[in-house]
Picture 1 (tube, helix red, strand yellow):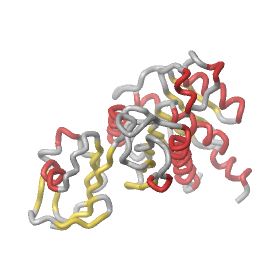
Picture 2 (cartoon, chains in turn cyan, purple; picture 1 turned 180 degrees about the horizontal axis):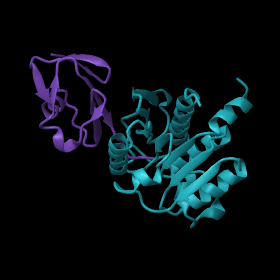
Picture 3 (tube, chains in turn yellow, green; picture 1 turned 180 degrees about the vertical axis):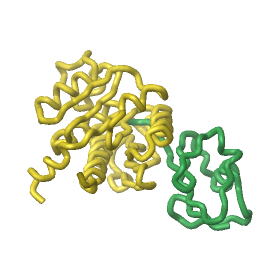
Length: 196
Length: 67
């Protein structure tokens, strides 16, 4: 299959990205480069200098809303990908409406409690929509500890499932990038199997 | 009973177990996790009352901060 055919196929789909930090920004950029039709990106946070150690932003974007800055950056990479940026904080009641119509949702939060809330809502109130969780990416090294696990047709997991930024070091570009791109790779794998 | 726990076969003396008891026995004590039994997500309020039976497929996923 040629890349132009792959891109044509992927242009028909809509992917939700919950969080636009280290996981979400890098995953969204990888998906835009592959030609995903629409990305629904949700994040309420603003860019801080400390985010630039891993997140797909630039120094002159410090102070901007992440979802708005990411929309701008993706437009510079692939203007054919439509980005719908949401800036409200996600909670149990607004998650289904924000990601309504998405073919796949990527969990890209920083905090474990938010990962739990999103997983609960998507798995119970957006049934049949695959969710790709990122869990375990703190520190550096240990390439082979990062893995992919398919739980079932609606739940996938990328990460080492053991390190936490609460106790095992900070989140840094290499390991966050590996997990973010693994999540993007999983999205592509799911969507390439879909017949349209 | 025999169950599949994270795709590995596990044997227990008991004929059935609540999720909470199973987590205790397997020392799966990490606080933030997602549990699916036969593909259905079990809310944490129901870990004491949801019973795992022979042949069930149980998935325990740890959620780690960082992103």
